[in-house]
Amino acid sequence: MEKLVSNWSTNVGAVPEDYIYPPETRPGNKHVPIGESIPVIDLSQVDKGDRTLTIQKIINASQEFGFFQVINHGIPDNVMKEAMSTWKEFFESPPEAKKDLYADRFTTKDCWLFPSSLNYGREKVHMWRDALKHSCHPLQKWHHMWPQTPPRYQECVGACSVEIKKLGSKILRLTSEGLGLHGEFLDQYSQTMALSANYYPACPQPELTLGVTKHADPCIITLLLQDGVSGLQVLKDDTWIGVDPNPHAIVVNIASQLQVLCNDKLKSAEHRAVTNSRKARISASFFIGAFGESIIEPAKALVDEHCPPIYKSFKSKEFLLKFYETYGDSQATLEFFKA
Ligand SMILES: O=C(O)CCC(=O)C(=O)O
Ligand SMILES: [Fe+2]
Image 1 (tube, rainbow, N blue to C red):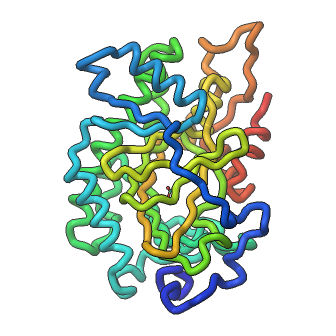
Image 2 (cartoon, helix red, strand yellow):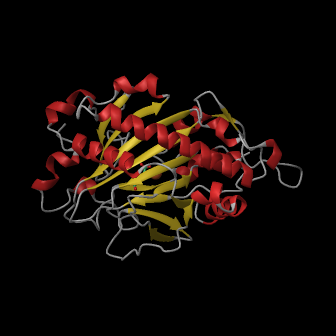
Image 3 (cartoon, rainbow, N blue to C red):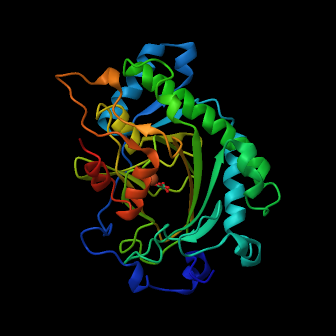
């Protein structure tokens, strides 16, 4: 447990050497403004207003940024707030309450608390983060493996997971429609959902380290909750853009296997998380994806002789393994599966 950043970060005045990234990948002192440009899409318009226009906004945002936020998404504010406070309480609970879930090298534990990344034992530089990872869908299969502390964990995170999964399916249906695919096409690849709850303690030198290094998520689509503290940044045309940490909105990002399914019609977005010196930050990523054995390949309806498939067919689990082997290098992983 001593490797958890939260265990020692308040006792250090400087970032330890094995958390310092090389100058080309560290954030440095350059100010990254919150981008007004990352689209905020009002989902109430799907049922009450202009459905076609909303779909078009989703497609445009997914092509331009691979990222957008949704508001009026139908998930009650108190469900999100309760889940966020549950994760905060979990991370801030005494070591005794968390020790059974902890491992600092790769494990097949279904509910796993770890420092930095899944690669702690192999990586050169560590990330300034502690994370809790567990599956969430279907709920009945997993929730008994979740933390027992705080006691309301299963109830609050369970309620939030069910809502997030429904919203993910809705967004995938709208995206399918926008791409001219049949309505259920993308949602058939959403059989699994895993959570990474991320805890980034305040950091004495945020310019030297990263909470999460640059990557695109390896699943189909990710829905992310933030606690009101900024830190998430998206890469567009070689420039980092800050994402507004609106605790009422949900961040949506196109992940790499969706890019494959739609034959590059939508792009997965590279992103990272930076730390700050004032406040701990919590985010919760819900990774929605296909079963390990599912075949992922460009949709037949999107390829023809003028537009050949850019990627080969592969099993979803092969993609995840390659992502892990390359230390989360999404570009190299996509490249590996090119036709
Ligand atoms: O904390 C964040 O905002 C980003 C986390 C993230 O990218 C991830 O969990 O994959
Ligand atoms: Fe991510």
